[in-house]
Length: 281
Image 1 (tube, rainbow, N blue to C red):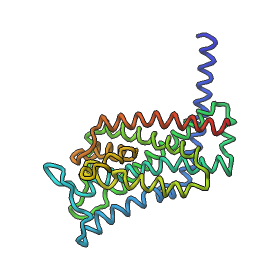
Image 2: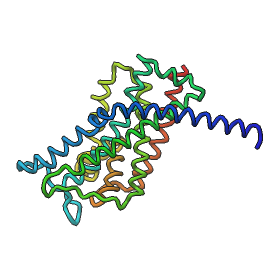
Image 3: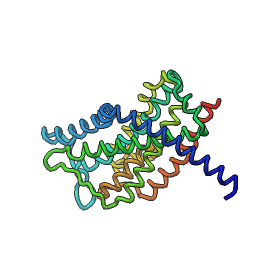
Image 4: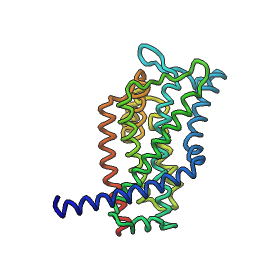
């Protein structure tokens, strides 16, 4: 083994050790705040599916009406569960990175300690993406377990795990994409505009992200069906719908995976660039 190879191997081990230490710290912080993590992740989806899959069908309104999926009708909760899991992933993946990063870059300057660690700046950025992705996956699991069993009589969701390879691929790509998006937003957003971001970015993202309806159902509004293709949540919702409830019409899996993979690479590269420029500059 040559001297440059030994040096490169030693540098890689050093990077990996520092990366792991920073990630372990973030996980310890999340564990200390587990209750608030679960509350902000699970409460809204549970209340939503409780109203639409329990309350409205019981009092005779149309919230729990079925969706015609060809040979049979699917309950509204079958459509809702993948969509709510997707929205929980996106919300947690974005905010788990954006909110602390905005604070670290402006008020606490805690990010300076990480930048001074013996690793390149891109390693710090990559750790934040991985940390956000892990929290996004945990949010998906928490939301799924919470909403799976909340439904009225005859409104049980038809959920299966026969397409688990697709499920894993969609979950991993979606988690990385949302965390990278959170890193990008956190490096370009001033602290005083966090509430503005929620109003002009998060709310439209959720309402037009095919969370409460499949993308195919927008066919009568063709202009809207095309417009929402710019929304990354659409592909997360449709990918999970195709993996968990394939009887419901959904986008082709190849399209979903290609868009998620491409968007992850593009947004990830852009986020790394803005992060490095913000700190080095």
